[in-house]
Image (tube, rainbow, N blue to C red; front, side, top):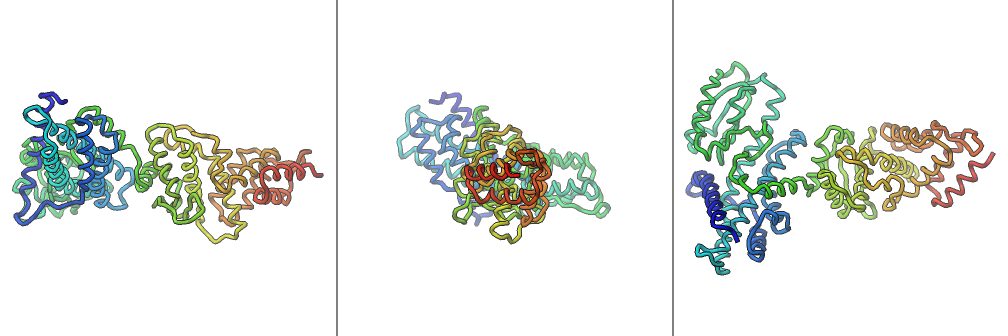
Amino acid sequence: MPTKNFRAFYRGLDDAVEGLYRDELLTLADDEKTPDFGFDSRVFERAAEWVRERGGFTPSMLQEQPARDVIDETFRILGGAVSSSIGEEMPAELTGLLENNAFIFSGLKTYHSLNEVGLSLIGDDGGIKPFEKFHEDVAKIDAKYNRNYLYAEYNHAVTSSQMAAKWHDFQQDGDRYNLQYRTANDERVREEHQRLHNITLPVSDPFWEQFMPPNGWNCRCVVVQVRKGRYPESDSQQAVGIGEEITEEPKKRIFRFNPGKELKVFPDKHPYNKAPEAAKKIVAKLAEEIKTPEQAVRFIQEQEDRRAWFERGFKTLEVTRRKGVNGSTDMNGNIDMTRERLDRVLSGLTKLRQGGEVSFEEADALATFWHEITHNRNKPGNEYLTTLARRYMELANEFVARKTLPEFYESFGGKMQHPEFMDDRQSTGYNTWVRNYCSLIRKTGADPDKVLDAVREHLFNEHYSQQAAGLVKAIKDSGATKADGTPLKVTEIKTLVKGCLLYGERMFDEYVNISLAEH
């Protein structure tokens, strides 16, 4: 049961949060209502009942599903505000940082709302509240956090994300242009924000480090580029002085930050950040989870070496509609996978991001993902193929994909996990073909590293219809011989490579042994 000091502290914190938003909600016109952003109150109600059953709320409970559902529902709205407010030209790593900040904000907001639910279990007399009274209080807490506060937070996320995107664009041009602060210039503009209207300064001026919009909840101000010389430059010290004066009040001082420069949607000094370290650590770890295909795409795109895996960019990761396949790609950056494998890719990427160990099933799904990525490294792109040409192509692609799996894992800062998939991956229909090809390399004495380099080079740079030639040439140029040391002829290797597609492993071994023994 919470102590009196604990309850007093959080009541004071609740008053601080309510005071932070109160004036902004009062700026709504008389005929306006706080918009409904579609927050599913049933999620909060289920979590509240769970808190009641547990007798209170603690930071560790943030890891459990009812609390995580509230976090996810909050982030669905605030994260949606971020993603819908920035264009595709915004680098994925910057978008990811903004969304990560919105998720952490959602997590800490959830901590405070559910903690308040826990505190509401106890009446002022120290006794357990009646069931009906408790649920009345839960409804009020839900309306306060998930409707009233959410109104201001959503608007802030939109403006903050837009300004972050603009700041990224401004940085590309440097001081070629000046920046000008502009209000919405109507009757609803706050008097203090009007004082910032038309302030014009270079992008490198310290003013923009603190007073880039939004400068308050529901702030509609913007910053635009203007040609140098078109407007007189403002006095920097005077501009900073005005900014400091209009944000001197503690609840306004929290907005002294630049969303684009700090890559944060919400200010660090928001009262939600006054949470126990245990809660912050849990939320930070939850923020590393990759829950949606869109997040996976952005995660892959965060680093330049991973972006290089896609000749035409990585665009989508979706559930396949095709039957009988683990995955597929159009080679234009769109990858489809079965629902089961896609879910395991997401959980596997999360573990790699967190430095954890992936399961056998996740490693298998990640190998499928890498197979489809490897297709996207082909420069010529997709083309019509005969059935036989397609089989040669898939043999080459799966051979390269499984032998380069360490590259995939190393790109996430880790070592190869489940190396057995480099030699044997029974979930793919190409497994026997690849194992036969590897057997052919061993039996002919070809250098496996040289073969891999040659097949990879050919796979990435030549048309898919020509992959049979690449598979043959790689073995020929890597020292392949018969049992007596006689170099194999191209025609002989062609026949053997075709046999990789025709025979099971046991029969292929016998076929190769006989072929290599012939004089």
